[in-house]
Amino acid sequence: MDHAKVLRLFDQDMREGARPDGPGVRVERVGPVVRRIGTEQGWNGVLWSSLDAAGADAAIAEQTRYFTGLGRSFEWKLYGHDGPADLGRRLLAAGFTAEPEETVMVAEPAGTGGPGGLTDPALDAARPDGVRIVPVTDPAGVDLVADVHERAFGTDSTRLRHDLLAGLSGDAGTAGDVVAVVALAGTEPVSAARMELLPGTRFAGLWGGGTVEGWRGRGIYRALVAHRARIAAERGYPYLQVDASDMSRPILARLGFEPLTTTTPYVYEPTV
Image (tube, rainbow, N blue to C red; front, side, top):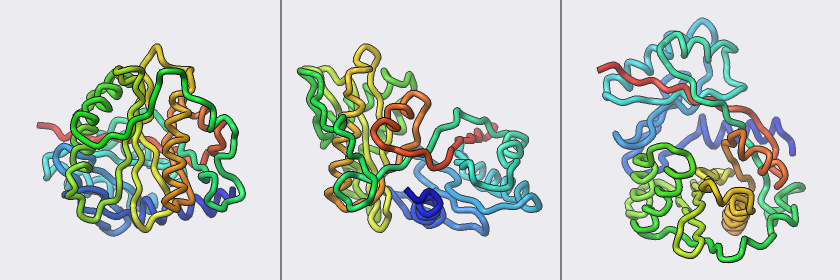
């Protein structure tokens, strides 16, 4: 994989050239910053910036004033190749809190014509007996995904539930498709994941892959990656992209994903 080329395309499609991806979402460019303004329950934040040391603090202050004026917390999604080199330190000094760093990993779905791709035979390995992958098409399915999310990650699923329900409403405007799936062992949801497919972009985003404790290490996460990769290939997306945690990174590497850059969420909570 030509990492420099793919990183340039990623910034072009998913960050600097980002487009609305859900109902009620706006994407705005304000000077050297591209921000996403979602609903009150949705994700709000900075997707891209091109800053230097002279203008970074002013840009941070401007975005903080803007989102605070809306009464919303927001996230500055800082990537490892963003400048200036001390932007993370500047965000901390401005009152942001850093969450754990993740690795942006990219692969080419098998069958899209690229020289690489997810060709590892392990992708086609059978799922554990009694586990089936079911598409999420209604609010009951969203409940299953939210249940897995809370059990797997120990975090609140309010935003996830809101975004999935909005995607199912059929009123997505310029948004693309959200493909959500849940793995069931009998009737118990044990793993879930989603994929975002935005028209006009080259990257299918894999998100939220998580398996509840007790079902990990059985190939379910891998099966969910393979399931979504096949859909992305069928729809002509040349790249898959994942923000990988330390837990998922080695699994994805074995499947053919390569690290592209890092990303760290810096979160700002307005004071009441």
